Length: 89
Image (cartoon, rainbow, N blue to C red; front, side, top):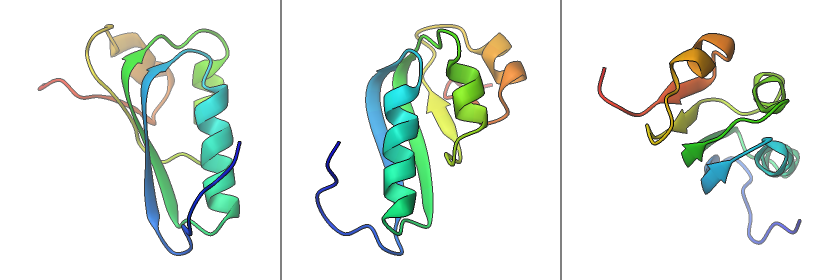
């Protein structure tokens, strides 16, 4: 993975179409923080969340993890405080 640009002192948002195990997003968040970002959040369209995705996200440096409602998120939101569904409540 290669970071292009300077993120020092910046708030960053990672955008992806899908999160399965969370490995790539958590690795990208770690890289951004190590490169000087002040915050890293994630936004994904489809939260598949295969094991151990929720544990990885919970233990990661990611702030909010926003997911659209293409897959129900109710249970995942209970298991991981960082996961937020984007549908109106």
